[in-house]
Image (cartoon, rainbow, N blue to C red; front, top):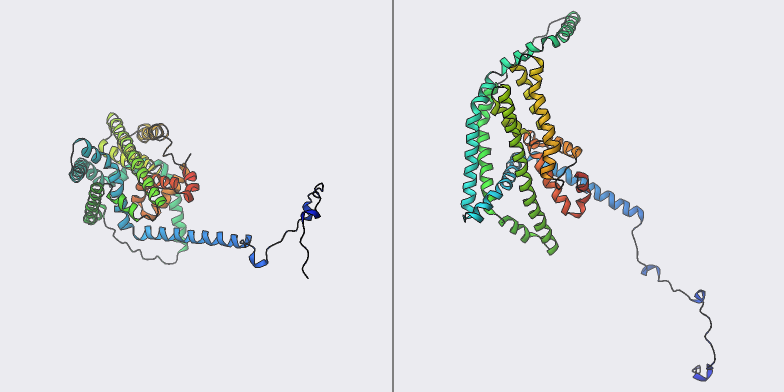
Length: 390
């Protein structure tokens, strides 16, 4: 049976609506299969653990590639850093001298080769003399330190007598002749020349290509955001690393020249050799100056008879290194590329373990470049703060 429809007469005009009661509202919940599902806390924790495991495996794989392919990667990295160092010079020739970039790159690389040949010709004879007199230098140092070594020698003789008394038979001693330093250097010279030639060719190709490689990277990037990110990172790496390498090179050259002047005034032989060694090793923070101090300690003991004059040679360089590292370099480079000293030392240990001496020399510029990349990539921003970002 059909129910009668309600009309306006059923609702008087002066009738008021009943008061609104929230408890009277019936909420219809969706069915179980229609409710949105969210991962449980345990599932989110497992997902984070999986991501961390994948990242750790990727990092280990990257380290393995760096260690295995070091013969290929070291010339590439060195050529790239040298091209960043010389890029302002090529840009100046292209802008002001109106030279094509290919010609400017060729002139720059030729000037680099000329500077290297001049340096080798100037330092070859002092280095050869020092290597030839190295055994005599060690004997001189041993004679100077004999008074300190006397208690150690007596203890060694006592332990040797006790060992002879306890042994029933004298074992045969096998003496193996090790190749000399000069023969080792002569055997490694062809390989070193080949690596230098490959580095110079890479420098020329990097300089002559200009922004061509950057354009290729932008074309490979999938989206507009990725293209902008690639351009931002590449531009800042190019500008900041060029500025960083130029400033650090100028500071190290000035430090080496200052050391040369001090050694000349003190009457130390071969001052140009030790100035060049100090300038080159100063590219490796902390480790390079430490090796220079050790070398100058040997030089001081072989040059002067008194202990005070001998220790004055490394002591003066130590004071110069403190002034350079704590005052001059932060003042010139500024806080934009400031780095955490603890991270720098750990970074040096890592690259020294991976690539040896070349890794120690390249660790500083590589850390500055990695800092710039971490600054622009959001997921690496915590690493940027850890390295030393403001």
